[in-house]
Length: 149
Image (cartoon, one colour):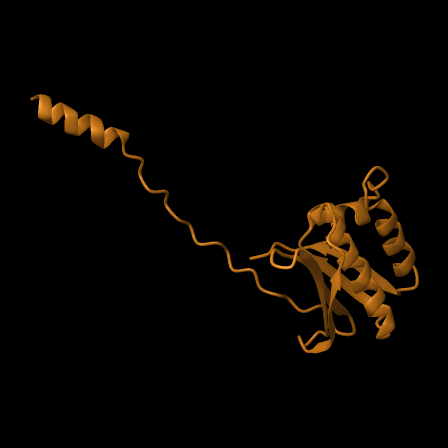
């Protein structure tokens, strides 16, 4: 009887493995015709203690119009690096003469700061202000948060 109770106790103590639910597949969706999408991101490289940004601009068919990557100074906060990546994406779109652009990034705090204007106290508020000035010449622009896989 004691052995049975011990087994029952131990069985109750074993955590059951969590049921893994598949993550919904996030796919890139093309913009409307004559509108472009510019996806940007920042990355931190542990080896070398450095950081970089990447930008790719695509048309409504999904074809790459232009891309760039470059090293940036390693910042204190990831959000600051994401803001730098966003600013470079906006600048790059202007350089390649795109005037109707949807900018997509995975840093919700940066996208919200640009869209809602709540950047006054952030360490990267000046970068957000630069972004707002740069997009003033675009015919159509939008900033969207996308989840990263």
